[in-house]
Image (cartoon, rainbow, N blue to C red):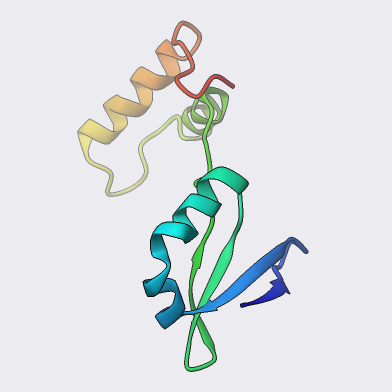
Length: 99
């Protein structure tokens, strides 16, 4: 396994798809426990990346709702209602991400 630099200059391990398949459980453990990131290659080309999941925050959701005050063209009524609810309720909601 070699280590390259990602676009954000963070060290990223590079691993072949075959090796990733053989050690997938260990890769997941390292991603979860240590925050490691991996680029998975097939025939020398990067085909996937494995990295810790991004955690959102309630404030980001509220910002999204404010930025999307009106429904986008083609959006269904349920989407518009959900955005309105988030915008209206965001001040009183508990943040499930604790941020």
